[in-house]
Structure formats: C-alpha cells, structure tokens
Image (cartoon, rainbow, N blue to C red; front, side, top):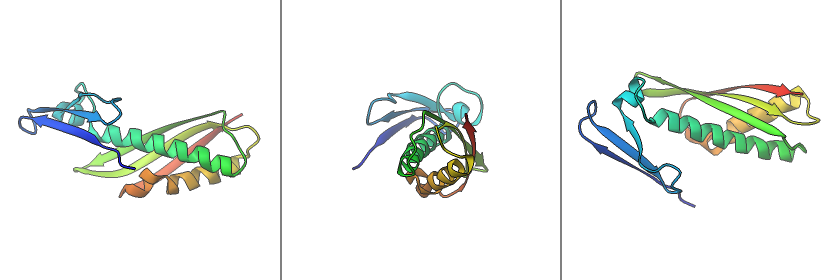
Amino acid sequence: MKRHATAVWNGSGKDGKGTVSSQSGVLKDAQYSYNSRFAEGIGTNPEELVAAAHAGCFTMKLTFVLGEAGFTPDSLETTSAINFENGVLTESHLTVNGKVPGITKEKFDECVKNAEQNCPVSKALNMKISSEATLEN
C-alpha cells in the first residue's frame, strides 16, 4: 500500500506561499506559508500535519492494543504536541484521555506505552516520543 500527498510552493521561502493536497482529497490545496509555520498566519504547516498523523495513528494502534487485551474503548481522544526547535522536530508528546470499561489504570497505561512505541508513525519519527494518559470512569 502506498499513500501520497503533494505540496506546491510559489515564491521565496519567506514571502512565498504554498498548498498541500492529500490523495484522499481531505486536504485539497490547503494553504501554508512562512507565517503559518513560524508565526500565527492562516493555514497549516508541516508540524501540525505530523502531529495530526501521529495522534491518529497512535489512537488507532491503542484501539487495537486494547482489543488484544480484551477491552473495547468507549472513547479515546489524543493530542500530539510536536516540538520544533532550531529547524528540527525534536519531540512528540501524546496526551490521551480514554474511557475504557473494565480496565485498570495500570493496564491502560501499559497499553498506552505499547501503542506509543509501536504505532507506525512513532516508528517512523526520529525524535523523542512520550505520553501521558488519563482514564475516565
């Protein structure tokens, strides 16, 4: 299986602008620019897209890990915070809130750690990856 996305950029690095589109069409000419990456400009940026990919992949992997342990989550919500320093992605911190009937906090934390280490995006990222988990009743 192969997936793809396309970026188009026009102009200089600081004054130019670009768009990104995904194979599925979910992203279609989504704008990005120097200001959307390094300031508070309108549009997306590569770090935000990496964070979205990591949060989505981790959450799906956690669902499978929980299933293998005999649990079905009512809900999982994950935020990935990507740290971008001196032109390098240095860390992704995953914060997950889960509602999983019948699971102990210890078992939930074990499943979270498994998903953190084994989701395909975690394996692809060359950066520190950490997580914290909250289990709701």
